[in-house]
Image (cartoon, rainbow, N blue to C red; front, side, top):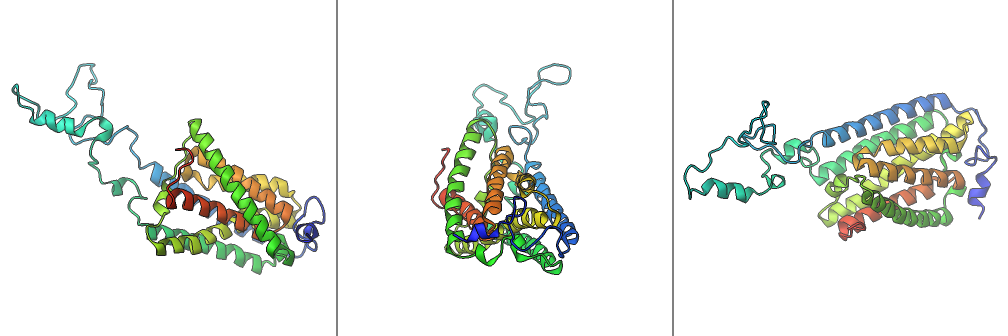
Amino acid sequence: MSGPTALAVGPLLPFSQSTAVGSSFDATTFAAVLALVTGLMLLLSYSTTQAVTGSSATSPHRQRPGESDDDTGVDDDGAATDQFDGDEPTAEGDSSTTDDLSAVGPPENYPPWLDERETDPLAAMTTGMLLANVAITQGLFLVAILGAAVLTGVPATAMGLSPAAFGPAPVLAGVGLGVGLYVANEVGAAVAEGAGFEYDERLRSVLAPESAAGWAALLGLVLPLVAVFEEVLFRAAMVGVLAAGFGVSPWLLAVGSSLLFAAGHGLQGPAGVVVTGALGFVLAAAFVLTGSLVTVVVAHYLVNALEFGVHEGLGVEWAG
């Protein structure tokens, strides 16, 4: 195979045979645009995470009308208090109120007195709205990065787009890597959950379509766009272009880009952040070793597509 090996010229620049460190392209301007796009993306991710996780009630159940903030049944003076302000049975045999309370059951089964749409932004959005939001925002970010690459003269080889980076071999390598990463991702998530770390899957659940047309849009448009954008940002730009432009070790850049990649997935919970960071580093390493953006895009797409297909399409839960 002549593809990956033909790209290597030294330990610091395995991406390009012709692009030298500090060559004519405007690396500083590109880095500034890259920093802006990354900052906006992380800010958007953080805002979404805060809106969703911050809106959840901190108590184990939603507060009922008339219920005291102190659910222990003790007032500030230490005296026992009634937990509800509603009517209580006044005569023996009057069970109307107690029947109502028993129908409610334990605290975790209290009816949702607050509309869920007012407390969970994800519940207020349809699947179509969420898919459109993902496609539009990531599409705009992708255009910004590619536009900056063209305007600053970034060589295609620095972004893993040399002629040798295309063809059956890079695609097949991406398929194998994607399937392997999917399995490793599922095992890692199961182990993390078993160890007590939270792995939030709400976003994937609400993004899952309920129609054939929705699945076609997800698998044929949204997930490919996500894979292309995130690989262009976190691998091609952060690793390939910065290594070629500033002479920084691509392995050091792989670590930094993986940390940022993990930070952008805070909505998946602590376990999701750790697993995503590890996944990002493997993809970055694959980019460094192969010099092919195609390989990591294919792998990234397969990881996401398999997650949706297995969990939401087939209803299979590895940890279940």
